[in-house]
Image 1 (cartoon, one colour):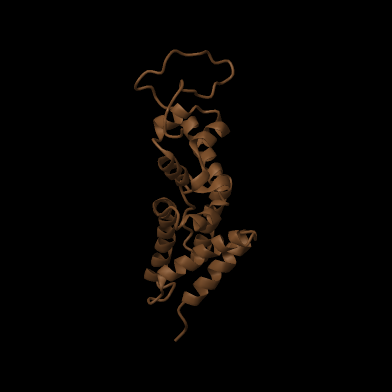
Image 2 (image 1 turned 135 degrees about the horizontal axis):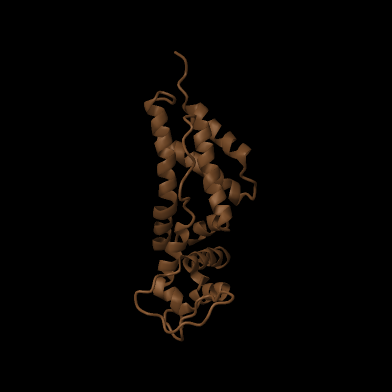
Length: 213
């Protein structure tokens, strides 16, 4: 039964390694194992959704024993929450001072991060999970969507302070339109590349650009 830890803890064995004695309390955790487990969790979520994702499935994908997984994450929601945090880029592109360029680069960075983690299918999954698992969706919004919105918002706000876009610009709507272009492209099965990102951003920025008196 999932949620009950049984059996000896299993860690992936490297070639040439020798078997060690029982794990001692306070032993440092192997960060590579955590990364392997979290990436496998994203794969499970993308394939099965939150309902059918299981720690058994993650263990089978990775070869990491369930006790090792439960030692780090006490239950399925905790594991799924940790996994979606991988989708947030550790560090976004540096600002160039050009709003179209900066917004486009942020979108492409976010999209590449989804692709690298194999989590593009998560976009559609989130729509399916909204009513069934509101707490999980709330975490997804807090950990993934809000940081990205905040980054884009800060770029628009800087441009407004500097007079590059109108003082009455609706920044929240602009952020949603820019982000939405990426997600809609994915749901439509169309490529989201440099041209797609730049075209969407340019359309929004031009609409917010001050008109000559």
